[in-house]
Image (tube, rainbow, N blue to C red; front, side, top):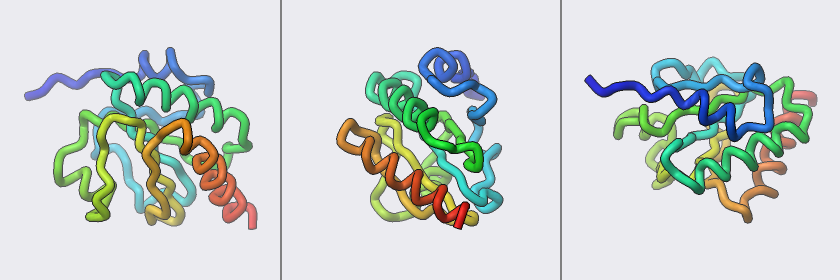
Length: 137
């Protein structure tokens, strides 16, 4: 049986958000996307420099926005199998590669996916603001 790695210390060290604002999960079974009204899932790879930097940018942007109405989840990439990755990413060709992939969920449905990158920071803001506006509208 594989040993679970606790990513919480790594997330805490690299997050600008208080840990109370994040649900940090090391098991895919602990997330129920269908129960999410408005949420963002950040797929984190503790072993990846780009994912660590992306987590810093993600939490910094979330700290700048009024995200109290959103469920913010950091999911350990190492808990994904081929089957669970398909549940998360569908058959769109989008996959978790350890770059800090981000998924937006509205009313239990994945509405957007983005690979974290410096160029994607504006998209992260825009998609999150859209999710917030839909919540408030």
